Length: 242
Image (cartoon, rainbow, N blue to C red; front, side, top):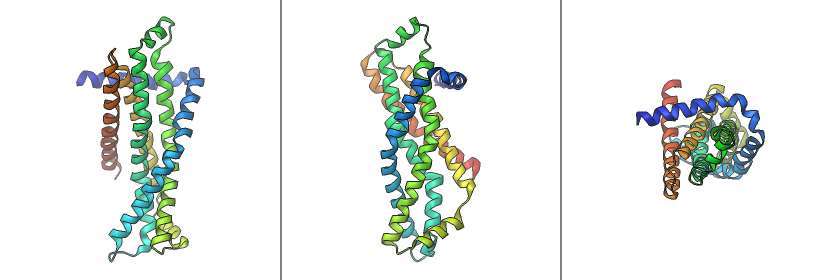
């Protein structure tokens, strides 16, 4: 266990060091940014919209006969930007992208493509892992902001259609409860989640053994570790900042 932690730490440190020469892999980086960002927008819309709607409905149920419904917009907004937006977006992308990155790298290990790269004096970590890691670190906060916006819109739809809350009341509630600190913490969370998902999924891909069975094993491990890490990081950040 300690050996694996040390190897992962060294791998992450190498990725961070290689960021200084990220421009060497411009074509690969643009490809991964497109894949990570643009191709994930539809999924983020779906997740954000329904997550916001569910939060608004649950908040309305909990507020009933206890606090005025006029507070629903502000509370739904805070839950979305601080918790549901960053965490749900990270979990979905850990399955869609993290597992995919891990499987791709593991396949390269099994088919000995990395051996071919080394014979050409090309660093596999720089050529393969770095663009994927960089794309997740950059796009995770952007997708989270997008998810937050869609989630608030979903909460608004539920409020106006089923709770008889008007637009001015909903917006006014958000203004009363809005804290820049909450929004920034949510974005910071997503940045750390991007680092974790991008690094651990690529690291596990490199750990694959040279047989086809190991591809499935490391892909499953990637999703499990990504999800567990997101929850652990989330708890630690709550303890640290709140």
